[in-house]
Length: 340
Image 1 (cartoon, rainbow, N blue to C red):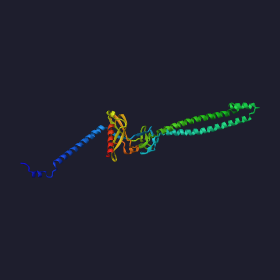
Image 2 (image 1 turned 120 degrees about the vertical axis):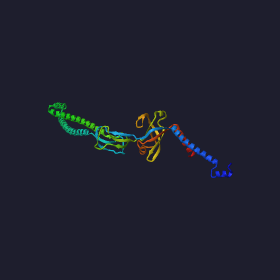
Image 3 (image 1 turned 30 degrees about the horizontal axis):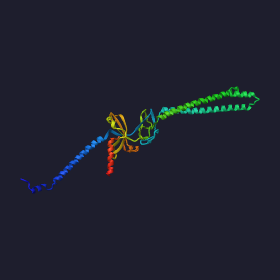
Image 4 (image 1 turned 135 degrees about the vertical axis):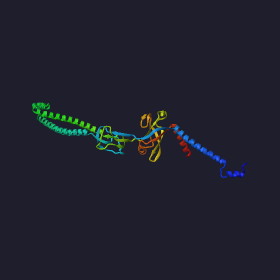
């Protein structure tokens, strides 16, 4: 029994036309297919257009400063956060034995200086007396008195018997002045060596930078090689990561790198650039031999990297292949031309 027209009308009441439902189904499937293709295509494009750098992290150039020898902490002159210049003294260290030897040498120098001053005065008085006697002989010298000329010759030759004791005393005074002068020079050299040795114990900044850690305490005894301070060099912080050596032919300095880092304000994308590549092993990154890659941030200053990139913070590094970057730049130019 066939369905009447009235029954057909009642059955299709409230439903969309079949053609409209078919169009909607086709559009739905197209959207789903486009989504799948977009997802898969984006993943494939990402694999083809970029090189992922593994186990990457932010690294600051930290310079540990250690004690050169066993000594005591005399003064701590800086605190964490202080800026320092190369050569600035961070921690003064002292060696009690060296300080005692330096004090002894200084006291001996003072004594020798007093003795030298007395000897120089005595020599000056004897020299003045000899000069006066010679002046008297010269004043009495006349052509008619040849014996006076003979006396002057004997005086200048320092063999005149009447002045023998005076000559000997003056010679002895000169010898004492020379001996004391030599001793004073020797002691001053020793003082300089002891002072340099004492100054050599002080911990000084190896580079311009900022103090990040002070472990020394005033009065503390530290051993040779003991850590007393840490400085972060003034260089900008960089990202470092590991790459399989099979990518050596496709990787080079200057490659653009997309850096994904998490900050206090949330995820952030930064522009980076490959600044260095070295072959080796870094156990903190990978136990395998590979390429150790350094990435700099050309758009950030040193201060900005210290502020926004925490030391050892994990990051994601994706180096862009040159052809993919060229395509992206063309696409950006096209969008700008089209006004998007």
